[in-house]
Length: 313
Image (cartoon, rainbow, N blue to C red; front, side, top):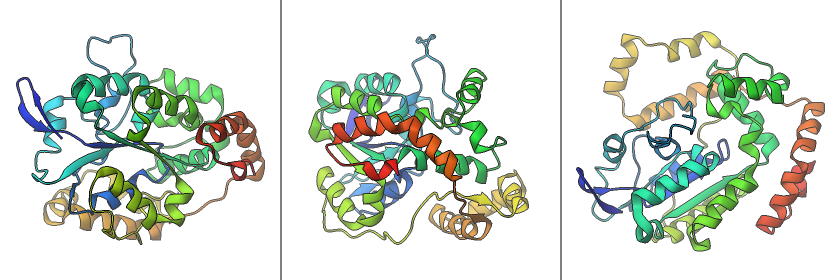
C-alpha cells in the first residue's frame, strides 16, 4: 500500500499484518504467504514497530523485544523493494499482545481510509500448548533458566515484568486471547480480520493458504511449499553448538555475506532437527494450566462460535 508521509514522500507500507499469537504458526504462515509471486516478503519477519509507543507517551512501558525496529524510516525501508504489482505485509506477534499501543499507532500512520483497507490474520493455539512452546523457544536459545513450573507462576511473571525482561516471558498473559481479539474487532471491520486455529493451519495448510490469498486479493490457486514447518521449538541436546551459533564471531559474518537468507533458514532448520528434542509437559502441570485457562477457553468458544472442548483435555 502506497502512502505519502511527511519528510519521506510516497512509501510502501504493509497491506496486511500477521498479528500473532506467538508460537501459533505465524512464522509458517508468513513464509507461505511470502512465496506467492504477488506478495513481497520483507527480510525481517518481526519488526515489532507498532508495539512501541510514541516518545510522548511516557507512561506506557517500553516492551523488551530483541531486534525491534523503532524508527519510521527504518521500518519503511523494509518494504522499499516491494514490486509495483505486489502487496506486502509483516508478522509481529507482539501486536496481538499490545493492542492498546498497536491499534492507535496503526490508525494514526495509515489514516481512516487506508486503515480500513488493511487485512489482519490472527492465529490461535491451545494456550496451554502455546505457553509450553514459547518456553522451549527461549530454552532452545539458552535464554530461560527457570523450570517451566516456576516460570508460569504469577510471582515469577510479575518479577520479570518489573525487571523489564522480554515481553513473551509472560507465558500466561500471552494466551489470554479474548480481550486481545475484541480490541481488533472493535477497531476494524469483520471482513478485515481472519482468525485461524493452529490445528487447522497444520492439518489443512493448502486450504488455509488459499483462503488467505483470496482475502488478500491475489491468485488463490498458487501452491506454496507447505512441507516445511518454521520456527519449531524444543530442548537443546547440544548446548555447545547453540552457544557457537549464538556467539559473535568472524565466521558468522563471512557466512552471512556468502549465503542467502533462504539458505540460512534451511540450514537453521536442519541443525534444529539435530540439536533439539521434543519434550512432554508433566501431566499435573498440564492440568494446572487447563484450570488457569478454562474460563478463557470457554469464552473464546463463544467468541469464535467453535467447539474448543478438546483444548480442555
